[in-house]
Length: 488
Image (tube, rainbow, N blue to C red; front, top):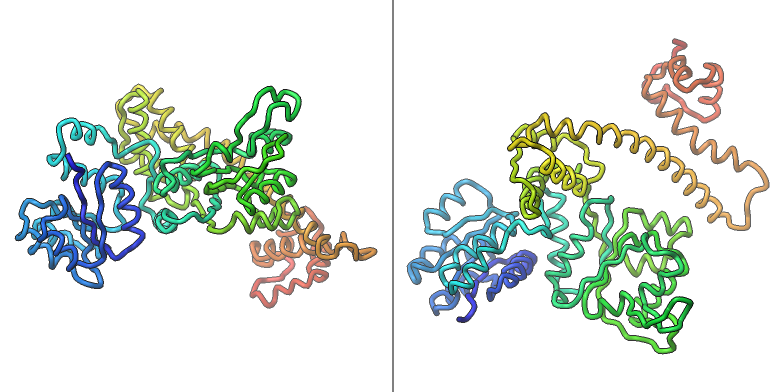
């Protein structure tokens, strides 16, 4: 039996790319156009087993063509998608005989599931069972309708057909590897390997061998030839996680491999050509590492071709409910008890800051599903579980703030030395650094206490006269800010 064909009409190239790839992965053919007239011609010629059409297109309105499609082929299912997310659009699509209506941005898995349902009777029995068994809540999918995630989706859609290097930047636990895997799965390289390497987990003296492989006898313990990650990923995607933790000497060898598209295994005299896509990830700011001299500037520019910011969970709280439900479904797959979340429990999840991001949410859901004896995860259960985590996170945040301040001072000093190089002033460095740190501290403090010098002195732990002297020395004139400068 030939595979069913989906006719897709949409003038948004990114949507066409992502949707086509997703539908093809389910075993269907897809033909696309941005012209409603062409779509209608295909239908009237008997082509296609399902139509997916946008509403507003430069060369026609999908809703206006819907009656003609249904007249020509009454049994042909039509799915309508639209960015004009009004009630009347949904009502009109239904009245005109649409099989289903999805407002943009739509849930990709839900739409693909709808495609499967509408085409089920066009498949043989064995195929129908396989489609039914394909879960739309697969463990490795991107979840989220928030504006922050929609920006990520838009960039990914444009990257799918091209081989540009991608740098994913975001906090730990935000799902950077999942995004890299998704990009690989949707790309033309999807049938080739996806190889992930955590650069922070490799001992310094083994990085070159890990990436490029080694020959037998190349060093003590090299009893056999070993293929490196570049060779393993040939034709596919190599994901270099925590690239910011890579030592400088290894960065040099990686840069050469990327520039020349070739590498040399340890102990070999032969170079190997390579054809792979590089996707990197880091939770660190590589531009700061470059300024500190801890990361090669030329490698940074080589990797930072398309930077993608992966938002932390606290910046996409509208996705928490969908993520939690997704985690519950995955928990059932792992053999854990079937649970549900109450409305108040979801509220409690949404109010939490999630310093560990999606990974922390997933672990919490798994733990509560496994340990709770109740059929429903209530607000009390969730808040009790989050309370000790929140306390620990508070302590971690304090430590992080302290480390951030230390990092800021170190960066300031390194930039200072870098700027002056060998022409350092003979004296005055301490005063320069102190001024750069003390002035903003005093200014913010006086703003917070509304110019009350005595209160500020008490908080800072210094004498009021000392404070007044420092304010004068640092040139902080509170008269211009409207704050009081009385002696209270």
